[in-house]
Amino acid sequence: MLNIRTNPIIQDVKLPDLRDRHVKVLREDLVHPFTGGNKWRKLKYNLIDFREQNKKVLLTFGGAFSNHLIATSAAANQLGIDSIGIVRGDVVANPCIQFMQENKMKIIFISREEYRLKNNEEFISALLLKLLAQGYIKNPDDVFILPEGGSNAAAVEGTAEMASELIHTENIFCACGTGATVAGLSKGIKSNQHIHGIPVLKAESFMSDNISSLGGDLSKITLHYDYHFGGYAKTSPELDKFCRDFYFLNRIQIEPVYTGKMFWALQDLIKKGTFPVQSSITAIHTGGIYPFFP
Figure 1 (cartoon, one colour):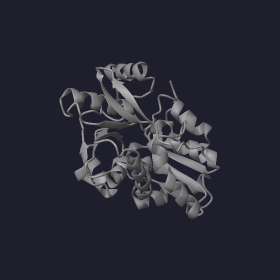
Figure 2 (cartoon, rainbow, N blue to C red):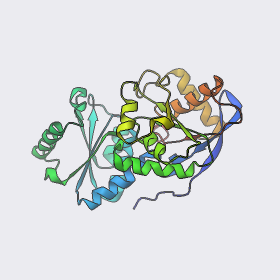
Figure 3 (cartoon, rainbow, N blue to C red):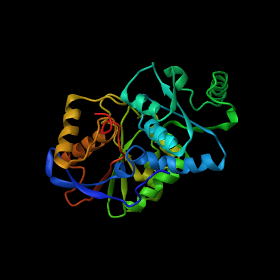
């Protein structure tokens, strides 16, 4: 069984360049050491579906620094589920991949060109036959396919539950990778609340479509596209310093892949006068990989 924290923790935090301006943070990162943050919300109902469909292998997709793959490997290992991670790009060895493998996830690298076909039924069928031939699976029908980032209708059902923990705030900030978390939140928030999504990759061409396809209400969401720092997992010396300063100021770890970009965006938008002093703001700490891999 996974030891999941169920009572919400909301704290006041200070921003490095605006120390007199307090905002709140929902500590989803404390839900579980490795399966915490929005990743547990997205996995929760998918794992229920896995059991109800009597599947034997959980197969999912992500990058070499994927929070989703880290969380899925940890949850699957603790629950005694065989897992396979399909990773985009060249073969690499890093602490994240090592962690997944230590949690018994079988890692298979595929080219970026192949990876773009991850939602194509013919590609999935061919992939399963290849895994069968290579001995990774015994029967393609045993495999539960979980999309990249765990983002599907079951994930949205889970992330929508966060809204009940955010009823006392007007503005909700959340980092975006696939858009499932903000899609779910938009289905649960009240009419006087608004979501500010911070895409952590170059996403102007697809993020709003992703959110809509997952049932999200775009009228309740503003996407701020200017804070990806060059793309997914891209950073800068300034962003790295910001993450360190935030930690020393609040004793809460953030990282430059997801949460660091979100808090940077929040600080910058406050500086620009986007939010009046009296407006209430809560940021969702969705976890992250660097706190675990210094």
